[in-house]
Each structure stands twice: as structure tokens, then as C-alpha cells.
Image (cartoon, rainbow, N blue to C red; front, side):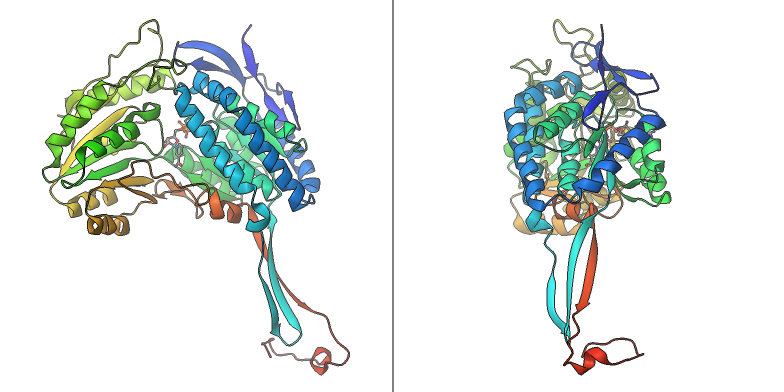
Length: 501
Ligand code: NAD
């Protein structure tokens, strides 16, 4: 019998009401390994009601008790890291070491949330006027929701819920329906850590569930991470419903390689950033801009390294790169490479027909390296989200910066150089949110915030870190006086607008 991945509402599993289901594929074998329940508006309403009820008491729980839950959660994540990595690898396809890496980066957000008492400290000003003090503090929003993509089924939700919950909110997660099981394991660990039922809920589903969340009047805020068209849609619809919203979108991350760079180092880094997780990372490098004479030597180094990558199922210890997530994703990626070659790009490494012995039906695409790509080609303009690295040429650093800035996306970018002044010019000039200097995946640590510019982010705040705390709370400022019988100013009537005395 096929296993069903159910919703997690108020601390227990439920199959939901509508009866709709979607297949969960094993990308390495191409077989269906489970079904996931798809929530309808009624299921979302039940989850929101459970969260709203839990919020009433969770918001009153002391900071030290909330912190204790986060510390326990952190320990459980540590202990269950391998189990989580296996679930991720089986449904997403990424290799186990990579899956462990994503859990580790998510766990660091939990560690950040363990410091919530410090992060929620307000300010206090004594004697802002005669006998008057002012102070500020922040309060949770209520029920907040996270809608997340397939490519980091544990880490991206972990960017959101530990901070939201530590701030005193109740959370509703709608993970990707393509790899839904990690969310349930994360929910079980919260229960084990002592989080009261209803503070963290999971509803699985597709657009129907998303719309129900966006329209629900009791959802105060929505954090979204996914592709740009959906991010734009979520931002517009949730904003129209009066919610606070942050919606992170897609990417086309450029790496600019100057001729003075250590080309071996650059090639090592770019191959890892381009083909790790089969290119299905929002911070994957997908476009290399070789400046001046760097092109030919760099492409040769990339070719040698890309050809050595070992393709295989995520659980195989020797595999470095797994399959892509679905058959449609594979066909889309292969189609892009075909169009690129037809448009005049050179396929230096061509993984379109890659096969993995014993996994003929798996969704595998080998590394693809396309040289002589020009800015109007679809392989450059579109986010392919697969193991395809394209190489463009630019004469100067300024020309490369222009290319980066003309691109509608602005998630991440990197420069490889041994010239500090050039790196500084680059980091100041690019219209991109996260920048690497000789670092290809410049993902900030949990105590900084993560986010792009332009079509990579709709809304004002980045996720996790200090901006995450700001997003999941709102501020109050209190101005207080305790009148004293002997202080005349406390007993006078002034109709003029109050000014400090
Ligand atoms: P996606 O946009 O297809 O799906 C994201 C979420 O939205 C899922 O939960 C999905 O169920 C839901 N969804 C899908 N279509 C919808 C629709 N029409 N209406 C309402 N909801 C819908 O993204 P994906 O394929 O799961 O993930 C890959 C994308 O996510 C890439 O574009 C990648 O760059 C992006 N991403 C961005 C970041 C970032 O930090 N900016 C991080 C990770 C992934």
C-alpha cells in the first residue's frame, strides 16, 4: 500500500478532508514512493484555528521557557540529522552529504533563535521629559505562515519557523508537495522538544492550499520562498489581504572571473556551486562571466572538473551529484540546453543523455557546460534550475558589472580576483543582495539576514537573522508618567502639543 504523507495539525496527523492526493516521486528510481494529501480551504481553516488557539497561550509563555524549547529542538535536530538527511535525499534526490549540510545550516537558525531573549530586548529612555520615561518592546503578530520550495525542504522552513515561534507566534507551514516528509519530521521533533500542540502546524498542498492561506483573515503574515512568478503573485495577493509579506523569488547568479584570479581555485569553486545539488539551489552559480583573456583557460579547467563529477542516487556514498527533482524538471533542463546549442552556444560538456547504471528511469541529467553564450539566449535569460553552467565573455570589469545589473534577478553574485580594489568596486556597484569575493555561494550566516534584490525579493525584509525578528514582531513604544503630588507640572492643563521640558 502506498504511504500517505498527512497534515500535522494541533500536534497530530490528519488525512484532511478533501481526499485530493499527489504523487511523491523517488527521483533516483523514477518510481512513486508515497502520496501526499493536498489540503483544501477547510483543512487550512482547521490548521489556522488550531494555531490561533495555541497562540493565545504561547504568547504568554515566558522567554526562558520558549528558549528552553529551542535548545531542546536544537539538540534533537543534531541527534536526528542523519534521519532527516535520508528523508530529504529520498524525496529531493540530493546526495546525503549535501542534505546534511542543509540541515546544519537550518540548525544554525535554531541556535540564533535560542538567543531570543537578547534579540527581543527593547530600549529604555529615562526622563525624556520631566517625570516621563519612554520604552519600547516588540510583540508577536499572531498566526504566521510559511510557504516553501522543494529545493531545501528542511533549511528554508527552518529559516522561518524557529524565529517566528521563539518570538511568540504560532506557525503554519505549507511545504513543497514534491518533498513533503521533512516538514513532518521537523514537526514531530518540535512535539518532542516540548512545544505545545498547535504552535507549529503543517498543511500539505498545492495552489489551492496557498490561496486559502493568503486569503485567510486570521493569518497575519506570510513568508514565501520559491520561483519569481509565484513570489510576485503571493506578494500581491497577501498584501491585498492586508498581511505583512516577504516573498523571495528565483535567481540567475553570476560569477565574474577576472584574468588575475587564481583560475584553478575559481574553477574548483564554480564547479561546486554550479553542479552541487544538481544546480537546484537558489544560490547556485549559473552564469560565469569571463573577463578579458580569462575565458579559454577557465573553460578548459571547468571542463576537466565537470567531466569528473560522479552522478548517482543520493544515497550512494560515491555519488557527488544526484538526479533532479522530477521528470518534468529533467525535460525542461534538457530542452534549455537544446535551445542553447541551437542558438549557437558550444556544448563543452553535454550531460543531456547521462545514464546511471541500474537507474534507467531516474531523473538524471549530467553536468552541462555551455560556452560562447550571449545575453539574448534563453539559457542565459531564464532560471534553468538544473546542472547547467553557461559562460559569457566580457572585455572589462565594468562591462561585467553592467551585465550583472541588467539582469532582472539580484539574489547572489561572486567575483574571483586577486585585486582587492576591483573586488571592492564590484561589491559596491552590483544591484544584488548577497555577494561573494572568491566565495561562490555567499549565503550569509544565520545571524545575518538572507535575501536578494530586484525580482529575487518582493517585500522589504530579508529572512532570518535580525530582519526575521523584525518581520515576525511589531513594536510598541510606551511613554509613562507616575504623577507626583509635589510636582506642579504633573497637575497643570496644557492644550498645546506636548513638548519635552
Ligand atoms: P515554486 O514557486 O514552484 O513553489 C514554491 C511554493 O509555492 C511551493 O510550496 C508550491 O506548492 C507553491 N506554488 C507553486 N505554484 C504555485 C501557484 N501557481 N500558486 C500558488 N502557490 C504555488 O518553486 P519550486 O520549484 O518549489 O522551487 C524552486 C524555486 O525557488 C526556484 O526559482 C528558486 O530560485 C527559488 N528559491 C529561491 C530562494 C531564495 O532564497 N530566493 C531559495 C530557494 C529557492
